[in-house]
Amino acid sequence: MIRRLPLVLSVFMLAVSAQEATPKPTGEKLAPYYPTPDSVVERMLKFGGLKRGEKIFDLGSGDGRVVIMAAQQFKAEATGIELDQDLYKQSTDRIKSLGLEKHAHIINGDITQQDFSSANLLTVYLLPNSNEKIRPMLEKQLKKGTRIVAHDFMFKGWTADKEEHIPDDGEGRSHTLYLYIR
Image 1 (cartoon, rainbow, N blue to C red):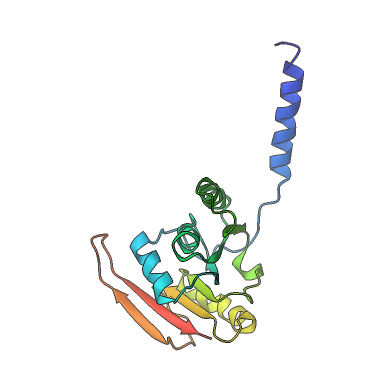
Image 2 (image 1 turned 45 degrees about the horizontal axis):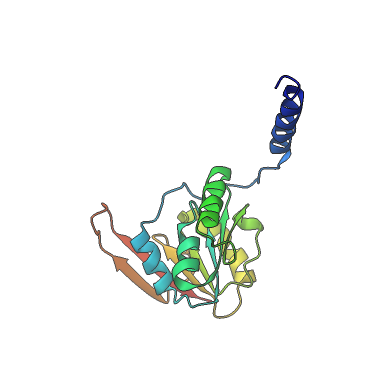
């Protein structure tokens, strides 16, 4: 056992230095983490008309619940973008444990540095000033017909094609969904 100690220590030190060398994504946090109830996630995906095989991006994916439900229930190609390293790891681990790696992915990165041009649907639960910040980027990138479902906060300067109010179902607050079609 004592002979193995240097080897064990060497392996441990390599693991620590590799972890320290992994660059953490930089960028501005566009919203606090506030999990969307599963019932609202399902309504968002239905409201956005998500179909089997479509590409969906969840901007600020948190614990990955939108991505996971999109892949599991709707059989979509789902990608989340999450800046927070812990939430990224949590959601990636959950995707692996559910065996969804083929259809569900999380990018540990900055929303403003991504390409959403292949999207059929975007889901967004960001603050109003954050929606305003990403709006010009989305206007440049999104193809005609791309659908955007915004949870609770509208995109200033855009007119929603549809709105849906979800009354409080016992969780303590109501929700509003806004559907935009580019």
